[in-house]
Structure formats: structure tokens, C-alpha cells
Amino acid sequence: MTETQSVIDILERASRELTTIISYDEAMRTNPSRGEQLTAIVEQLALARHKRLSLARRIERLASRA
Image 1 (tube, rainbow, N blue to C red):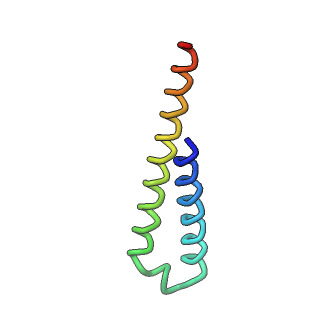
Image 2 (image 1 turned 30 degrees about the vertical axis):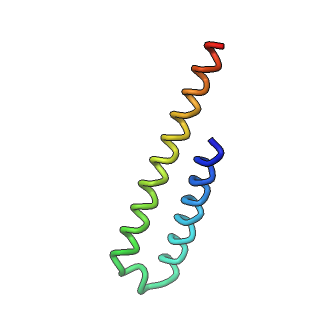
């Protein structure tokens, strides 16, 4: 869980920083690869969040059996 949360934190920070850079720099705004990078980060973030939720549910099920 800790490792997954670390990945989520990194991806959230990268997303915020890239969004800020894009909003302040006209050349970055018109560069389609920056949008693709941001989309990729958002997708990875969604996967990491899903993994964290899945792990939490698995832990809850195991704890309820004990």
C-alpha cells in the first residue's frame, strides 16, 4: 500500500507541475506531445488509484476472515 501511495503522490505532483507549465508557456500549450504526456499521467494515476483500492479491499477481506 505504501509503495502504491508513493506512486500516486509522484504522479499527482507530475500532473500538477506539467499542467502549470503548460498554462504558463504558449509553446507548451500548442505542443501536442505535452497533452499526450498529461493524458498518460492521468491514465497511470487512475490505474494506481484502482490498485490501491483493490489492495485495500483485499486486506479488509483477509482481516475479516481472521
